[in-house]
Length: 233
Length: 336
Image 1: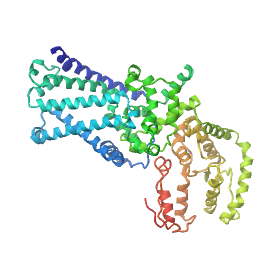
Image 2: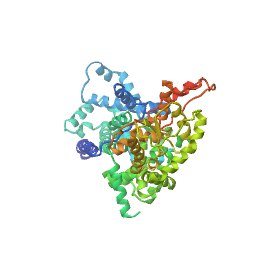
Image 3: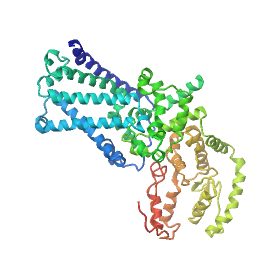
Image 4: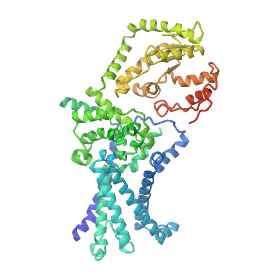
């Protein structure tokens, strides 16, 4: 058990980070080597000064989605809001934020907010899964689409349960800092708490996600900027 | 499918896999938003008409031969071998898309699925899987460009037969349909049909334009079958004619595809800039009306009227205001 936990919170996690970096580098090189694009966006073409604003609006507010599917727009927004909250929350585990953010992150209202975001995010993934399994999307979905959603769902839920059970325990932030300082979690510290199996499980799922990220359509977190830019060219 | 054909197809696919193509394949999450945007899917309700499904056929082949993930874990990516069966699916997928690019507007990532479908059509053209009539019309159009001398007399005779009707229509005894006018200001490109020649000819005569009718038709069937090379050859006939006559403007009939090709695509295909401006007749009519060269009887339409932008002229061509301006001149109640 100790060896497994050490492996997950150490070697596996670090290996996933290495694969993530190499995978993204290969992706960038492949794109760089491909023939330059012959773009022809849609009309009306915005003036140069308005183009950046429109690209940002397309990426962050998805106006087309709102127009044809308001419910799904809400689900998508909740999901991404939850992701944003998760990133902020994880940064909080590594270091302290100054000023108002510190107060926000430590107040009980913040706890409720994080819990709400977690639930909304989980709900959103379940909606995505349901859509994938029903017509017409089930015909365009492959195993990797389900795998991706299940990995995200697993990471979401395990992280949320971990937070609810162990957030008050001082060793979680410390463990995260240790992992990032290349000194993985010591299983002895985890003994006797839910975190003894939840943290390795969470880390394992996150590691798989990191490995999978450059090969999955999660790269849209970077490439949607490029594709939305092409639309406005 | 034999090995030679498969290799040829894969080479073509590799050549077509531009940076834009790769962005699109990497980014598309098959979220299905495009299904709600596609009028074919909305009216037919068949999953095969979901735009993401249409391009998924191409993605599965690409993953199988050009990505490590697809080669090693084909089950994960749905990667498939390139064979006759998948080409049949591709045929159905490619030729049920109208190329309107509405899906691009509503896609959260702005993916131009039509550009991917055009690659599917190019692969199909390589194997000869093309709707027979379109293939034949493409060949005829190219052939006409090479032996125009043989047709010239026939075209001139046909125009001469139309001229009496044109003179009655315009009440101008001198009205004519000029062909091969060197130094003309405008080269008007019709669809080759009587309607697409007679009425515009009347307007051009009434406006006192210095013009010449193109010997070629605007339609480009090469574009419909995704064969860029043949589409370029068809458009080149008009470009060469315009250069030969030294015209300042090439004016294209309402056909959206023809306008888009001449205005936006031909220069990219040929790698040469046009020495003339390209206009749609809608732009020219609007210009003539504003200059007072032709007139309209105002308020002729009293019932409520609206205008639906043709995809290729509006979204893909950039012509929005001119048709609306013209309608406002004749309609009392014009709304969006």
